[in-house]
Length: 256
Image 1 (cartoon, rainbow, N blue to C red):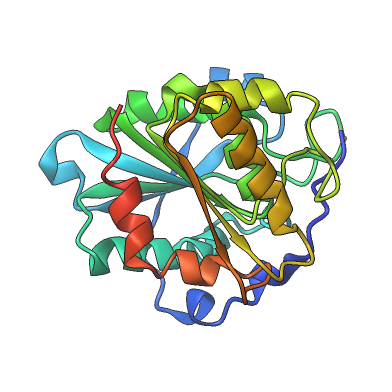
Image 2: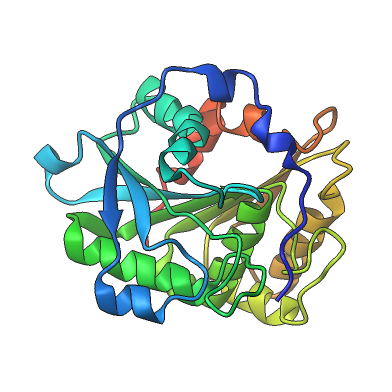
């Protein structure tokens, strides 16, 4: 298995990385789920934005990009900081924000990327341990995490209320790769609200990748798929996405 070889532009994200971090709880997959996983860290971060006191609450799962698999785990909390600030700023709580980690290598010693089977194990774990509303499971991810959003949504559409891939490719081998399962993904994603985001000047993952995916979804009958391309943005378009009220209004309005 090949790694998703993205340039780590997203690691230099100005205000996204310099804001005051939120406190996260570290949770862990059950032993059985950990044994079954291939490339995901058994530990993951959980941010509680007033959810515990309110009964069942929605969850927003964030998938990091390439390079996010390096230790320590808690540094991923800085990448989620913009989402946490946006949820509070635009009054979308109470909710959970969950940040899993894709390890650099699989248990077989191969280079890793996000695997839908691993993410299903994660969601099973979350639903068992936290009072999460299963009808409001939201997914977003940046770069390799954008690919992970397409892949998980294309594999397990019934588990997600909405997905918002940001500058994501559409193949496990990197920006130039296209999954052979594209049409099947599109057929499955036709059943899920999708809002993709891309940068018009992105030289790492061209906007054409997201545009192609959305076009295939629409061709498959998906009427809830749309895309926004920021014409002057590059691979760091997530700065614009995760600070916009539009993103939070859209994703938190969705429900299965």
